[in-house]
Length: 392
Image 1 (cartoon, rainbow, N blue to C red):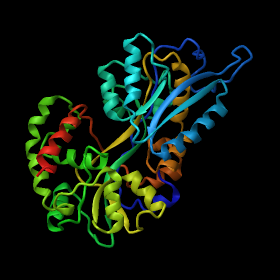
Image 2 (image 1 turned 90 degrees about the horizontal axis):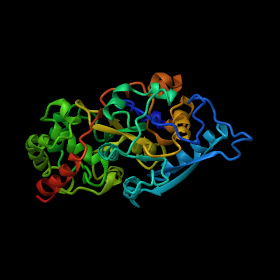
Image 3 (image 1 turned 135 degrees about the horizontal axis):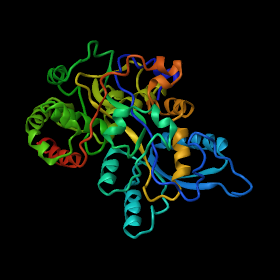
Image 4 (image 1 turned 90 degrees about the vertical axis):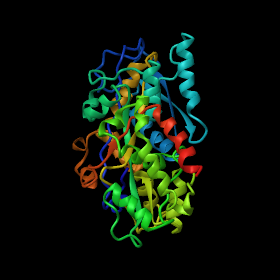
């Protein structure tokens, strides 16, 4: 999310805003469904206690800092609702949260006391198959109308991408004066500048995963990036042959760092001059002086994929009306401004709904973003990459 310092570094970053949060479904029995979704919920003498719901989320410290800011803002405006955050630090494993929701459903025990869940696209798709998520609609969440309709349709209105980041080409402008503009130009640059480009193991971070997926789908029809049918894998051969060939020219003639931070560290140290990276990580680290000021970003044509972070409402939650109130707040321009400032990423609602200052900061950053949704095929992709590329 762009702070004033970080907007300076957004020279050629071309990305699109992501879609965002939703919430609908059956009315909760004790959440005050009579009030309009955008009306603050106030505690009354009759209610005595506010409706409390459990919100499970994971991520780095900046994600916790975000919710530590937004939740008190919401509760101040809605004294009738209390949000109980359950933070799972990044790397400690968020999978048990999904498993808990699924196990509760199978045991006829509702949602397992989990009323709101934050996670990535893979668990949105997985939950769709397991019939876990509530279908979200504007009649329950007024500000859902501010979210891009195409993005919501891509996930069948089962989640809200409340913030987003795109994978871009990050480079040292002191060493690279004319960065590649297309995928073919990038691959040519890698071959002509051996060991000066790196991407991380795709199973350890989204930036490397994006680089691999973009190479594979370069040779497939555009609509394939929204297809999770296993038959698509038959078209991967040409892409894997390309990645294997590039392996001779990447950092260390085939060394693939772990995690997104691994390649950023190589860029910081000057060991490489160019990497695929998440835009929010680059912006944040440039703003903090962790990356050199010479670091710039650009998007390619066709673009790398990016990805929102999603909020999902378990279908069997008994607190859905209270959750809808919270989601409506998160989608407000006020809350989205906090998302932009603290996360150095893109807002979940359309830029036209944001302040002029925020809109101006994203000028030139709304093109090129592609949203991949290949579901479970991602696991097959990383597994084959390990054998066909990394093992060579």
